[in-house]
Length: 276
Ligand SMILES: [Zn+2]
Image (tube, rainbow, N blue to C red; front, side, top):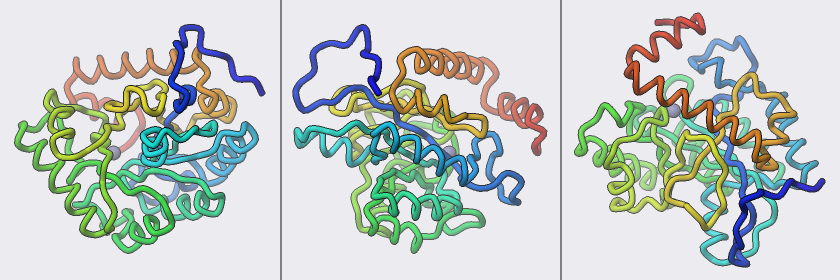
């Protein structure tokens, strides 16, 4: 395969590779399973496996953002990659983690310490095993409350408490933060840097060049409806398809701002036929 070159690419330092896709998954379980996972964001185990096969066939190695950042910082040349992340610490991520480890692949798992061990959520012992297997366990906030409804002190507290709780339980540094629901607070970047986070993994669509623009890393949300063709093109950082995803996510962000979180979630739940 020959990936299309980005038309506006500028010369890069030798250690930096090209732009890559950072994929954002949630639950990985069959449709209709009685869990609290949002069906819109739930990918079946078969589809997930097929996606990993497709990345393999494209020569794109699934890696964690943590490991890609470390390689870029060390100046190591990076093989073509696709970054894999999971939000919410859903219990179905345990089996997905096993499949990734079996393939020698990496991923970041963003969890809320206040929810770890609750119904349909991974336990601390599962997260410890995943970390020991080389996977990256990172912060999705102390609770899943949206940061845009918090005071600055509340945001600071969520950053500090979640980092300390995960580091205490896992014994590995927490250096990445993914804001719940992708909602940010004006002080988030400043506070996250001050609390020792190296990067934010956002819900804005786009591609990322490791070692460049690391402060806010865009991600592409993988949905129940994301077909293999789209996943292949995303994994190759197809500029046209990424631009389309970016436009869609900007329109969605504007709608959330316009409606407010409460109204937006109610309308979305009603549209999806879920609890209001
Ligand atoms: Zn979340």
